[in-house]
Image 1 (cartoon, rainbow, N blue to C red):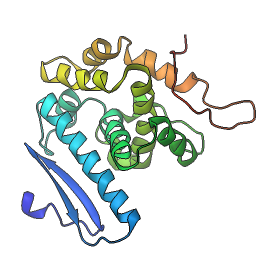
Image 2: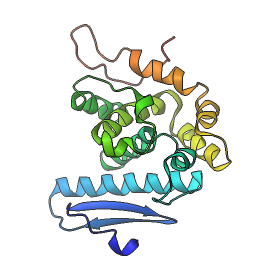
Image 3: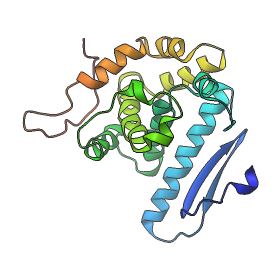
Image 4: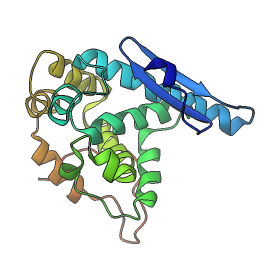
Length: 201
């Protein structure tokens, strides 16, 4: 499997395997390229941590097993996006949330529809963009340590829903309601900057 890791035609790609992640670079040179490389290192290193804590790093796992070990795919990819951006560009996490508001055209998908790994095949842009927004919300509200605790809980054998409640103190359904209903824009329709403070009741 590792021998085919760099088969992608993209100029940069990455894969995670048990205990190691690979970054494949075909060309590099500009400052933008360096920023992308920094982002990919942060993104794939986050996946390695997630899978090490959760107890699995095998791409051939079935849908239910992946959900058990990795949690919902929107969070799995979203937190890797958020931390990758944090590594590449030293700005607040909410900066990247606002970027994804524009990419989503301010239409926020239902996160409950982006839980299974199959969503990556059917709705990949939504997984990454909505996942980045949801993950940044969680980081604002609970910090990166709570994200780490979520994956530790998976490694101890809790279901992903139980892990979510223990790590963040709310159910996935409560958080999904917050995600859809929190104030994200001012009266003029401009994105609100700064961290979130409380969940929507």
